[in-house]
Length: 119
Image (cartoon, rainbow, N blue to C red):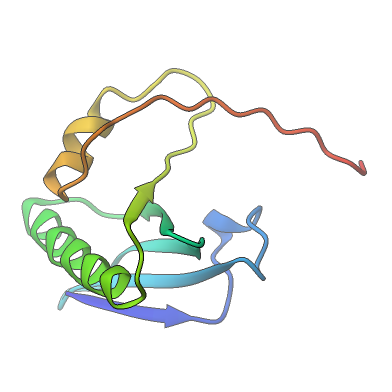
């Protein structure tokens, strides 16, 4: 397991405001398996995750990553961590099962709409 903060904004999160998010690579002994974006709010962390590889071993790494994130949030005095997934179509039925593996619960559906101020 490895979590490394990076300065360069990953292309997966290019639409996120850089000043509001910190970006991380997630890796194991083999290679990078994903990227994450983390935003700090007054009483919680907002986390976004993009995986580039998947396997049972990576699932175990993610479970360890979530322990680190929980510890980090507790250290910063946060009450919760909110995982957010953006969908541009049908809801992915695998999302609740996947997030439960990391210890998340109280799943909800959130819909958003974007209105660009300047085009």
